[in-house]
Length: 307
Image (cartoon, rainbow, N blue to C red; front, side):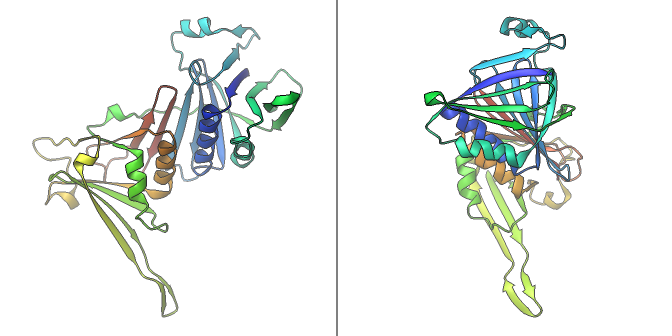
């Protein structure tokens, strides 16, 4: 496999760096997936309960993008556009996240950086992912990273697959989550029929012998549905998609892991994006994940959360 792409400084390099930093909080390893029309960063946590993906459009986000065929022939942009499936993966590699994120965090606000070049050429004797920080005054900082070839992830779920969905600006969710405890592990979102959404979290108390060090804490925030961009909750005629615990008041609840949800909201807020979420008809009993997405013209992010 052989590829090369360039990221301009400023907002492009900042968005790339923040995306890597966000994925580093999901997994110890990050996958770089090369497609004909995009570069995709993927992360899967150790328990395989959370998957995160950030897709960068090759035409709009990257300054330059080159992919070579297996025979060594370079594909130009016209050839890539002529492919029947531009989103088909060319290949993927896996890196240790800690070193990768350190490189970009160090240079995210470096005013001397002119551009960032990332390349890989497996025809060379030493297999390395090369990151070059091209600076002004003829200075270039080069990092050679060890990687492992891996199979690209195949994502089968999207927000269009489910009957229940909501959209909300990430800034609102970030402000609301500041009221929840840092020790809370889960967030319950309860969609009520009276046009309100209740966000609830709970933390257990901490005791040492008979002494109470921390009291248990339950936080509930009632948010008017009007504060959301859109809410669509579908019920069938027999109400079979209502959860048993919510059947009395006709509400529907989903439970989200707060650690990964905070990561998503923080990244979405940095991109000033609107978050779109979707979940199956019976979220408490379904084996399907909750899908959370946000996108703009150049970056698309997807989280799959299994609860």
